[in-house]
Length: 237
Image (spheres, rainbow, N blue to C red):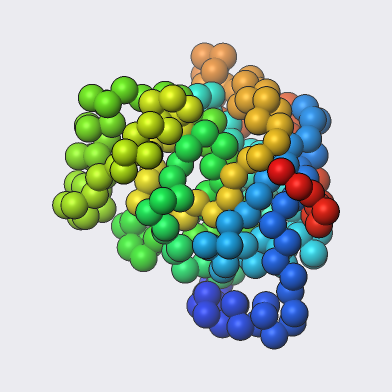
């Protein structure tokens, strides 16, 4: 199947011309409880795309189809609505969103970022139109962060990449997934209910239980984790 790839500039113009209200706070309900997310104004293309999908009811019933303890949970794939577990993670909406990689928006614990295909086929690092992940992560010491910096420089070709003092403090004290910085668009964060995200990340999967399965299913939870997303226009942190 051939998909029409829309440029983000056209998508953004379409959204603004329709008067889309870029609400910032949303409630995500799951079988394990609810949590609240905030979207960033610094990434308006991703913010407005999420809002448009929400108004269409897109995310309701989609699942967190990929769960890796100590790393992240991933969801929002339209393919997760069907009965074929093998196509989860491969779905898209026929367009990508231009990367909005902002240096100070890092992969801290609770960060929300857009999934994407790899650099080999996606050198511009454009984001999937709907799939996102939430970082659970872990803490890192400075020596490990030094090594991660070197890895990111090699992977991105940015020889000057370095974690700021603030980012280092966050990764040491709060945790996250620093190895993803500079490569994926972080467009929001969990502001309430991170304990629910931890519960979701603890879901049993073939990887976490040591069961032998097809590699395509290694991070798929044994019990489905559907979500329902609603705007919270009056929410105050």
